[in-house]
Image (cartoon, rainbow over all chains, first blue to last red; front, side, top):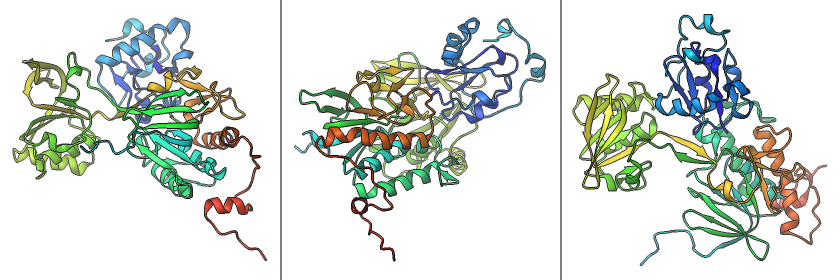
Length: 107
Length: 358
């Protein structure tokens, strides 16, 4: 099991979650974060940190976002680690309530 | 010839084996101790404390009853003090890889290093699993592990006079870097430290010292990530380091030392025949016993309806598991609940005087 970063993170990337992770399992892409499933220990402390509720345990991922489980695993292998919070993109607030953002993802 | 292994090869016979020396494993020693059950404690880390020590030794914990605040280190130290009277034997740096039921009803337990136990009961207090070094994932690299690639330093003298590339930005990476550059006992021929950015988790003083040594041409620091390797005649001859500038440089070496920290893995626990649900061991809430009678699971490793991964829940589980295990160890003895405040019997096992009240 692992926790998974979902679609809401795309173009928001607030990074509040990375400060609290005890095992530094977040990885940073150009406009989204992912969790490395090999590192996550399911402690769940990141869930309430996310302002857009983008993180869920694997088994709670809704049906239409199941592809993010695989996506996290894949992208975590190629993206670098992020362990300190940084400013969100300037237009993050504009994107935070938008749905269906997968086409916006930069890999 | 003297055996290089200090542990006996004949099995240790015992009443209880506790797998995991985190706070709950340590408190399991206490609860068993009150019932006069002696335990052997095994942990993959070289020191007790589990997640409290490995993940947050200096962070404050606020939810231990009657302890308004303590750090992970303080909690561990206090638990060690509390269990001292019970004389548990610790086997640290050992990972349990075999658990099997014997014909006589007891269990065979063996560690990867070859220490063997025969125990009447087992308490799995494995937390989130055994902490293992995080690996550097580069194609073709794994076959050099143990020869030219190392994730821990057991004997620093084997790297003396060698050309080392050290990867990582934490205290372990920096401490070994300084050690191999300055150390008189096992000075390396050359040391190149590689870290993905010019920002370190290691203590600032070590980082400053490292930069001084670079300025004095005693060593080199490269910002970048290892993205490939070169092999020559079956040996690892160089690593390819891709810098933040996108340029990949070939760095020749004799030995590659990687220190990416530790990450917990459930590991062999999954293969002991225990019922597992989402990486956790299923237990009842009466005795915290698993589907295998005689094997109990306490703390973060277990799951049951309503489970919350809290240290204080683990303490409660340890108490009930000890009472649940007592009949396996003393089948003919009636076990009474006694209080440490008033029981002269418990005062004896705790090694304290029974107070006299006027």
